[in-house]
Image (cartoon, rainbow, N blue to C red; front, top):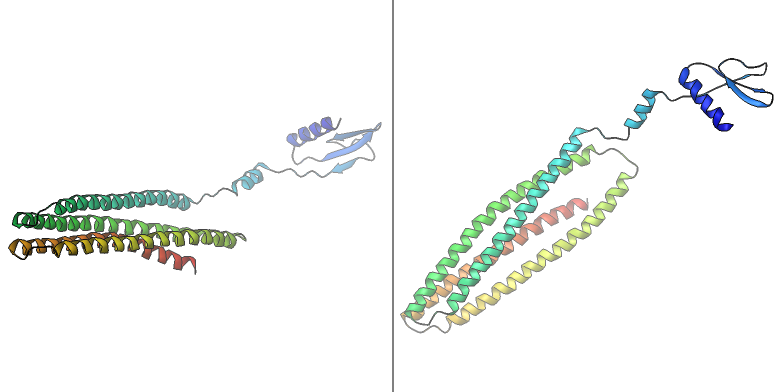
Length: 263
């Protein structure tokens, strides 16, 4: 019975949204009609949501800001470029270390005579050329990486300005900052650890080269060999300075991010 009453109500509303609805009791049965159905008929106040109101209510939760969508798409593209540049720098770093290791093994096998010293000198010059080549390649990729990060920061700043006010926004921001700050501190420790490792390796290799230099013969061959070892020391130093510089740039960027998070 209740279902039939509800269906009648819906049907009457569909016929005329502005028409009056009456209810009355006939022979103990509750009845609804668009006309007064008895002396004690009561008019029913029915509020019906119009189509325009329904569409308006449904449209509110959706964000129609096209600039937000553009920012999201652009940030994804820039992040992809950042990952690509970081991977390229890591590749250059690995290639440089590999090529330097091959040449270093060749210098160890040279004899302590004029031929060996001359050959060692040539190898040392090649080492210097390798470090300079990779310094240039890494520097160029690092410049591109810095530009990508600057563009991403600009987009993130724009997004924070355009964010709507919410009573939960400050809490969410504090939580996000706390999580990111923990990650930044962890990354800082990793990069600082790499710098310390590179410095230990550099000092170890320089000490070994100095030791070899002390065994040089006291003649022209010995002098030539010592010059080649000095050039090799310079190349080794350049190699590790490049590696340390990469890590230092990471540290500078992370420290800048840390200062912003602590504001």
